[in-house]
Image (cartoon, rainbow, N blue to C red; front, side):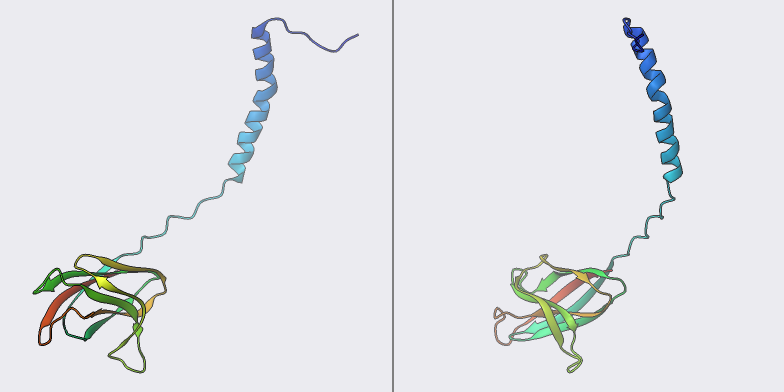
Length: 155
């Protein structure tokens, strides 16, 4: 005697398939519900602080400003004003305050070809004290002074 059942009607095949596979689907859903773990809430976004520094530089000089990062993250430096000549190219530098010379900055990122509204950025920095400098790169005439506004954005 054969134990094979032959279903000739498509309707019966669909019913048998539903009866065979439905319990497996429900078991999978039931197991997956038990395996769910509560998710951690989304972390609070780290606030971005914008600090503005005004200063002056003359031929061959630089001016540095200190700031503190409260959280790990990135820093963006941007010159937002240059007078008397907005098309002047200057240098920007980012570093940490030099303990041997408090008025200086130990640079670790520098760009000597920056114009107004261009950004110098660095990422992956740890919270702590930093400094940002604006410097002449040989474009300021003797006896002239250039005033600037430097924006520093950081966490």
